[in-house]
Amino acid sequence: MSDDAPDTLAGPGPNELRDPLIRAELKRASVWFGLAIGTALCVLLIQPLLLIFAGLVVASMLDGGVRLLGRVLPIGRGWRLMIVMLGVCIFVTATLVLTGVEIAAQANELRETMEAQSARFISWLTGVGLMPAQAELSSFGRQIMGSLGRLTTWVSSAIGALASAFMVLVIGLFIAAEPRIYERGLAWLVPSRDRDEFRVTLDRMAYTMRRLLGGRLLGMAAEGILTWIALSLGGVPMALLLGILTGVLAFIPNIGAFVSGVLMVAVGFSAGVDTGLWAIATYFIVQTFDGYVLIPIVAKKTVDLPPALTLGWQILVGSLLGLLGLMLADPLLAMIKVALERKSETQAEKDEPAAKRAKAKGG
Figure 1 (cartoon, rainbow, N blue to C red):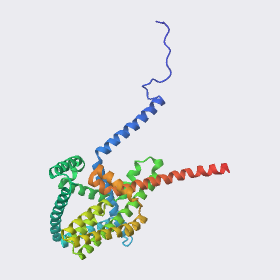
Figure 2: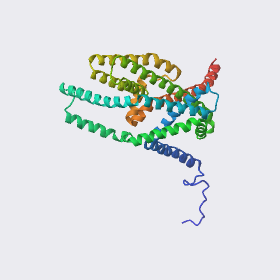
Figure 3: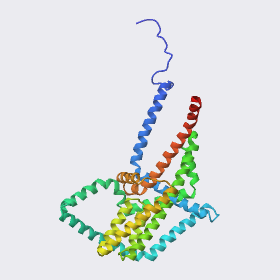
Figure 4: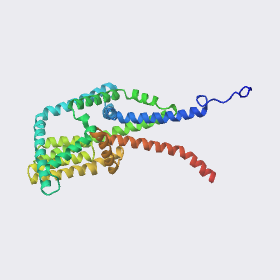
């Protein structure tokens, strides 16, 4: 061993945070670790997040009504929101009071009719060899429902569904009452250099959401009323209930129209071949009007979503997130499209000066 004193090291040790390399690596690891935690939380909390997004959808519809009412009534926002809510409550109450007994009777009749028609259809498929035997079919159905149980358990309870609907309504009311408070809160979470761009994107999303949902409500009303009138003229049983169901299911494009069409045709053929053919004609006429007249008009005012993209997105989100995800798939896709379009515009604005300088330099 040497008697000389050891030299003192001047640089920081590998466990000291004064080293810029250590700090950079720690920051990088923290980002990836935080991203992993955030992804895991989104997966675990996907149903509450869907409820919050549903509240935003309700808030957009209420906000659209408040803004529309503000064009004719120069009063405070709170009073306009109260008028909109009173109008909704009066409409729902009047509908239930005037047609409640008829709807209840038709709902029970519809259930019995669909059970009978389903049994006849399955028997016919079994007879021609296109459907397995009843025991095998029951086993197959149990397997399917078992695989979907984890995704749809939360809707199996009526109490849970009512509680979820109440929470969605409360969230929508709070946000519609003071939207700027929540907008400033979200902007505060964004880095200061990106807040202006974030506000522009958020305003476009809100504008698109209001127009999209306004057009969707218009389409729902048009499909429901036209279906009710046409089925009543053709003598199809339960015309009022089928019209209401068609209007409600119109909130889910493509898939909702298919489900309402199946119900319509099944009920029509339960009353006879002529009535069934009238139901088929009604379905195609209403869907043609909606697809070639109403939807193009609404798409020009909102966001034009390609049908194949919308249907694929609905199938994906519905499979992963269940019924609520299927109902919210279209607004969610519209918001994603608006965000991507705004990002593309921003990037093009940044690249334009560089392109002009390169062109001038080359000239």
